[in-house]
Length: 79
Image (cartoon, rainbow, N blue to C red):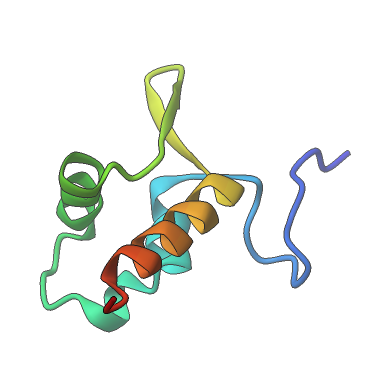
């Protein structure tokens, strides 16, 4: 039985691994760096990217990431 819950297009689970997060955020398309883990680490440290740890592994709740994207977008809008 598949216990992962995916979004409408079935691509991303509710709790994403770092590799899934990299794809979700399209980091390879926008980053000039080769180590996408560094990009994620910087987002966690500098921009408070939401993350939980289970068995010492970071997991990224999809809905929290989507809210974080919205918050970041609103912060960058000119007033």
